[in-house]
Length: 118
Image (cartoon, rainbow, N blue to C red):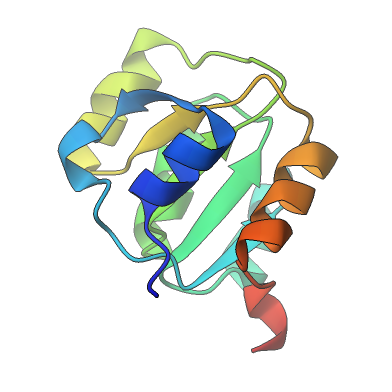
């Protein structure tokens, strides 16, 4: 069974801020990190990115790496400019009240793998 963003949204009760129509995207892996250069160097296309960052540069990184979406943790909310840019670039942004650790644990339980080791 293919994991999709929609299945993750439902399982983790995420709030979808952008890309509501893009949630059928397959999730090929996951990557957690807050250092943008690390994500650029190691995340793989098709991964969902877990971060606490909320500024517009997250959209540029997700777009450059062809990530399927971004989960922002700790209930943080991106500003309107970040959301606008994400809509333009067709990057789903989802919000979780959980910590990075808890989101990663839940994704592992759902079968999402650490894509850096694939």
